[in-house]
Amino acid sequence: MTQSLQSMSDALTALEHHVRQSGLRMTRQRKVIAEVIIELEGHVNIEQLYDEVRKRDKNIGYATLYRTIKLLREVGIVSSTQFGEGPARYESNVARDHHDHLVCTRCGLIIEFENDEIERLQLEVAKKYGMVLTDHTMELYGVCIDRAACDARRAAAG
Image (cartoon, rainbow, N blue to C red; front, side):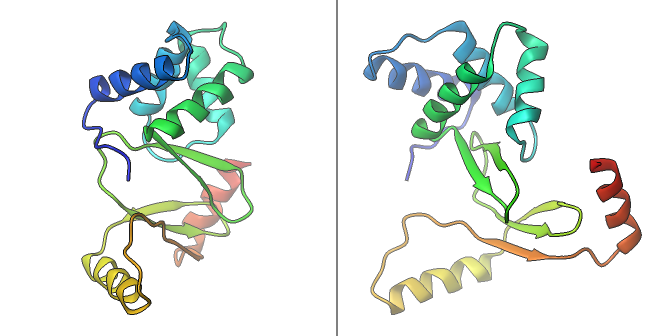
């Protein structure tokens, strides 16, 4: 598992160390991208992230964004998840506890949840099969019970 990053400062220090260890420079663009994704709530696709980054620096392009996301993932600052057949979504790991996801396959709503009993059962299953868990992701797929709210979110997403 990746080191615990409890603050923006921890994350930027870890990123700078990783970048230098990789023979690269810690550029202002990398710092801007890291700050934006750490500050964002929820799960964003590359387009949403690009829009937010460009609000701070119009000179940052997709190539810089993709290269920096790769570095952020290597350090453990960002996780990437692909829910179903949708686009990859990114979320910050900084100052966040482990959580799982419940995803509506109609409107795309993503609900984060924690459940101690599920966590306990996963450890039990791993032990039963001779494994020690080092990490995991869990995604549950379904549809919203509130069909009107689901339809409204679906329409808003366009």
